[in-house]
Amino acid sequence: MSKTKHTVIYVGLNDGDTHEQKYSVSRYTNILKNVCKSYKVAFSVSIVDGGYFHEDGTYVEEKTLSLTLMDTETGLAKEIAKDLCAFFNQESVLMTESEAEVFFIKESI
Image 1 (cartoon, rainbow, N blue to C red):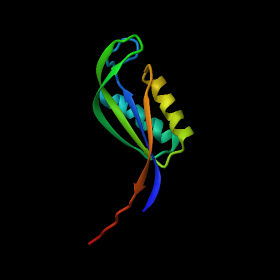
Image 2: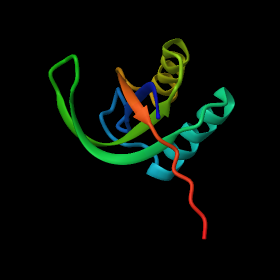
Image 3: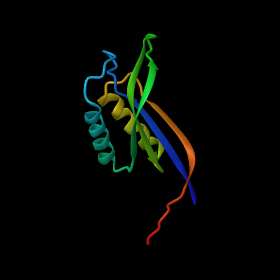
């Protein structure tokens, strides 16, 4: 058992200007995967439903990609978040960090 940094980046899929989703979820997921691959970070991604209040007060509901990174330095995670924010034309993305206990379980028959 060890302790490590657990980072989650939430990226909405509605365009920041039109407030509508322009492309398929799979297209956005492929972009996200390519970003993570280019930064050489292991990741998990989930699709979740979310809601967001824009700076102008407009509320939207949208599909959101939840990107989980383990043991990734804060600076690198912020760079990934900035890239995804720009590539997906978002007003902002949400990033959380916490400490997690990590276990690798191996078993064979």
